[in-house]
Each structure stands twice: as C-alpha cells, then as structure tokens.
Amino acid sequence: MNIHIMGYRSASAFLPLVPTLTFQIFDSYPQSPKTTLRDSPLFTVCSYTFDDIDLDKLLEHYPEKDVDKLAQKHVLFSQTMAQKILADFTTKRVDNLDLLIHCTLGASRSPAVALALNEIFDLGQQNIKERYP
Image (cartoon, rainbow, N blue to C red; front, side, top):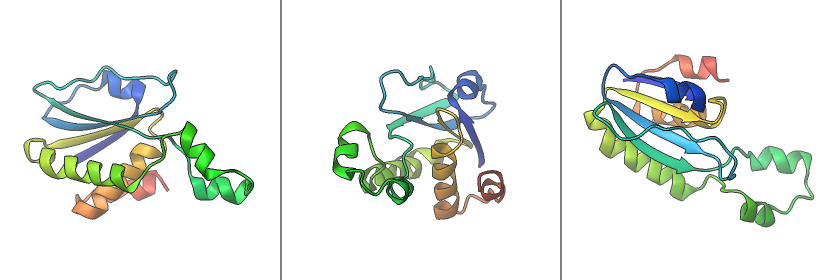
C-alpha cells in the first residue's frame, strides 16, 4: 500500500490510478479550507475533524493556559478519534490499494496519522519518519 501525504490543495487535484482510501482531516474553524473529495469508484473517503494543537508543547510554553477552556474552542485529538480512524482503516482498506491522508497543509496531522497507521499495521513505508521528523 502506497501512502500519499499532502495538504488540501494537492489532495483536491490528486487523481488516483488505483482504488484509494482517503482520510481527510479538517480543522474545526469555520474558515478552514475544505477539499471536494467524494466517494467514487477510485476514492473511499473518510472525514475527521480535529485541530493541530500539541497540548504538551502549548503547556510547556504557556503553563497558565486553561486546557479545559481550550478544549471548548478546539476539537482536540482524543482516544475516541484514534479508535474511529483505526476502525475505518481496518474495515475500508480491504478494497483499496493506496492510502491518501490529507489535512490543511500536510505537515503535521496527516503525517502523524500516516506514521501511526504505518507502524500499527506494518505497511512498510520506511520513509515517513525521514520525511516528517
């Protein structure tokens, strides 16, 4: 399985050659960009919404921040979200030869999800850690 990691602009223009499982990760902000990817003969699309916030880093630099208040404004990644992504991958990867994961820029959330899926399911994509340290 090839894993494609990209931002929303590249994902909007992506033309798969084989059936591709697509994980779209959106921000919770109303003004955030959205792609136009839809289920089709070559796309199986799963959509998720969570924001790009590393709470540990945030609290390291701003210990006075109220995490509960922050969680009310942002959709934070959770164990429930992780379980949904794992369940979707487990059930929908069977009919797909490639995996496309995209978020707004393709720089942190989509590589993190790709890295996790690669390690958990032993997908053999060794270059993810190198490309996204």
